[in-house]
Image (cartoon, rainbow, N blue to C red; front, side, top):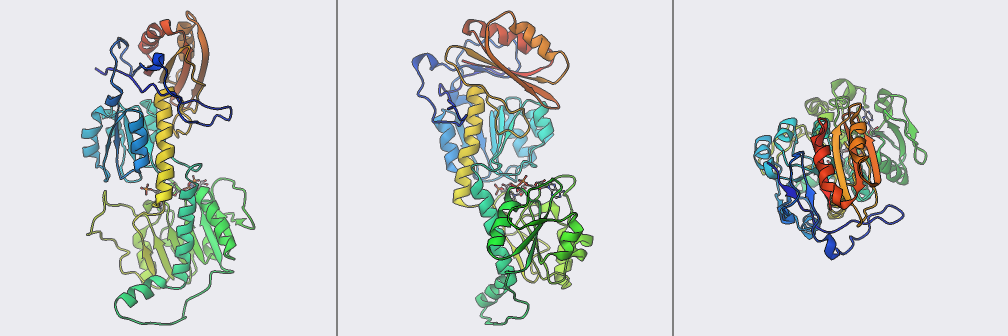
Amino acid sequence: MSKPIFTSPTIIRRDINNDIVSPSSPTNKQMSLLTSAMNSPDNAATLSFPKEKIKVLLLENIHSVAIQNFKDQGFNVESLSSALSEDQLIEKIKDVHVLGLRSKTKVTAKVLAEAKRLMAIGCFCIGTDQVDLPFAESRGVPVFNSPFCNSRSVEKKSAELMIAEIIVLSRKIGDRSREMHNKVWRKESKNCHEIRGKVLGIIGYGHIGSQLSVLAEAMGMNVVYYDTARKLPLGNSKACPDMKSLLEMSNYVTLHVPDTEQTRNMIGKDELAMMRSDAYLLNASRGKVVDIAALADALKGGRLAGAAVDVYPSEPEANCNDWENVLQGCPNTILTPHIGGSTEEAQEAIGSEVSELITCFINTGGSEGSVNFPEISIPVSEETHRILNIHHNKPGVLRDINLILSEFNVSSQILSTRKQIGYIIADVDKEASKEIKRKISALPHSIKTRVLY
Ligand SMILES: NC(=O)c1ccc[n+]([C@@H]2O[C@H](COP(=O)([O-])OP(=O)(O)OC[C@H]3O[C@@H](n4cnc5c(N)ncnc54)[C@H](O)[C@@H]3O)[C@@H](O)[C@H]2O)c1
Ligand SMILES: O=C(O)[C@H](O)COP(=O)(O)O
């Protein structure tokens, strides 16, 4: 049976702009912050749960700023440099309260079913396709990522990588450099071109695609884009009505879409055949977006002038020296090991942002920045205790909760729902919090209930 959990007495305060400012210094009476977790109704909120027992497991070499932030909260942090397989994760997840990962580790429903104590997941990257988001939602586990605000450097870095690779491909620098390392001096201008005046076709005009649009236009390129959502064109860029027209007119095609049912294999043999034979394909989105066997055929058959690939249908869980792929040896082909977000600046920004979002959720219940939860928060008060309840989104649940709350004084309350769940934060009188928590936990549709002292 799970035990009540104390979180550190640090209260995250929000200024009038709702920005997270530096945590306030704890007062004596805040010294025993209590969070009785999970849905064990008889959870006697009496024993203190040492905050250093809040277990944080970080995978895939997450930046040290996140480790430090969690340690500053008094949490027990374990950080691994590699991803974990599903079986390894099932084994380790049993007593983990916070799981941090990047793009490799797959958090499946099977893993989540074993994660009895899991309070939150942090994707210390942009993509969240590696987590079964609907199942995590149904288990009352919010997933946080670093979509854009602090990760401007990730977008910029990914966009910068694309610009660099467009130039490298145009001048065949990859091949020339490899030859020079092998004593070959081969100076030629055949099939080498400037990028000024050429057409860049961007598929996926989101944070990264739009950043790339701005950089490409600054380099004198003409930009077109295709996106399934309506997007405001930046600069002189133009939207294409369909992907086919983009593929036919572009000298360079870059991919910046998430991994979804719709985007899987969206660039296959037929789409590659629509491209000009002197065009280049660059994929820095997700590995399953491109059929790489078809891409290798097109490159080896001279039906494409070159490619840059940063992501692959399957990728090693850690650095290795025996990686093999069908694209190896293709002409004018740049292969990189999923480094679109891998700069010190980006990783520090992401580590800081995601660890702060998770800390805020644990310490105050605020869920802004989650991708699968209702995003709600209310200012923290030292005069009350806070009830956090996650429940199945069923008719009548709010009536049942408010019936319980109506017997007590509630100083502030907020509720929001998504398809599967409802999430409520209610500040109540201190002497009533234990009984309220017991009663709300016992409701048939409650998934998780916590009390913040
Ligand atoms: N290689 C790397 O290291 C690296 C770095 C960052 C992001 N990424 C990947 O790049 C993806 C994009 O990142 P972002 O921050 O720009 O995300 P984003 O959500 O801001 O943009 C994605 C865009 O793709 C569009 N889209 C979705 N499905 C589409 C479809 N079928 N056809 C056309 N457009 C479609 C969306 O409408 C959205 O505008 C991420 O999901 C991530 O998987 C990879
Ligand atoms: O989703 C992302 O942000 C990128 O794919 C980067 O992933 P990484 O953190 O595993 O490098």
